[in-house]
Image 1 (tube, rainbow, N blue to C red):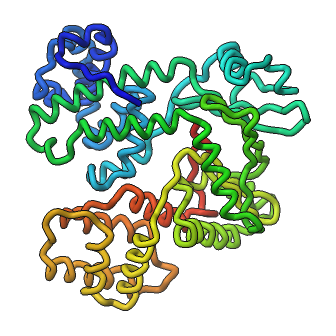
Image 2: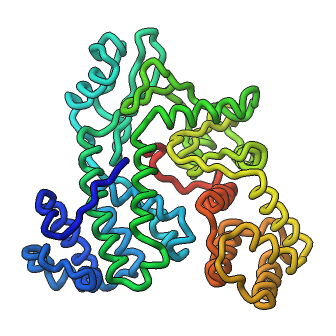
Image 3: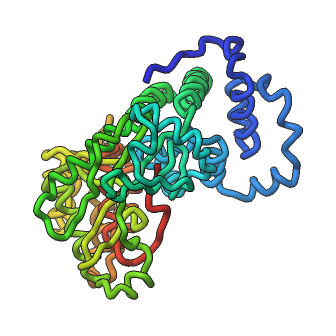
Length: 431
């Protein structure tokens, strides 16, 4: 996706209303100092007066991370997606902000059935009735990029159709232009921005969005994932219907199961939560260490449980990849921690992360020793894997060790192992 660059502020008038809206929301959530620093106050001719003193006082009670998350949600689809992606980048933002951005949700209304019907017919080149025997007009779920409908093919197979939101390309293009302009101003006026190169982040983000806007890529993810587990009895991967899948429409098998987060329903169905947790952990480990290609958002709401405790993953938009060397380095880190070897643990951690200046070895080894004492001299049932990994990331950040994005996704996936069968849900799909 090529972003058209905005050369000077005066040339942004074709997007003036959206630009003013973005800056007003930033001011609303207490980021007026940033707006002042970037020297773009003229875009707030109106709007400043629209924010009441009471509202400002309410916002001031929130943490900075909370205000950032709320601002991104109000800014809309492009910014929500940016926040979701930044929540996987510990090399760019602090852990406390990562934890807040991981809560980002898409809160958008569904778009009309008539528009959805037009998109499907234009994409698939046939009337809706010639493709589907039945199509639910009310969506199962709606989000910023698209929405999901239950349907039935002409051969009576039950499916879900994910349909991209009309005009989403134009919305994203406009927002990316403004993002790139703001990023360039940050590099010009904020000394600390030079290190992370905001313009580079926006360009990488545009590339990520380009893939997410092409549903054939998600279809390929599903098919590759299915091939990894062909013949595996404990997992089920939904079928993709390629003949009714395009860049803007994804048709896949409808799954009738119970969310891993629905504890009462699992119990009513006589499903074994301990077995589900055991299988879920085993499957995550196989994805990462056997195949190096894994579901990067395996929270309980994204996993359905089928009869006989079979696990079914949904929503394959976010996948992670780990090469063999990284897997071996991570195994070295784990083994050195298990063996209480601070020196080897420090070597493994340095091999896993990115850094410009090697940290003080004696300090790093001492803190790794304290980390081991804190977590590994207690009963296994008391081990909190999520807390353990968060503290490891905090330690890396303190020593200016940057964790590569896919490694962080892997750690995030590993931290969800214990959540299987213990609840905590979000929506089961993010269109």
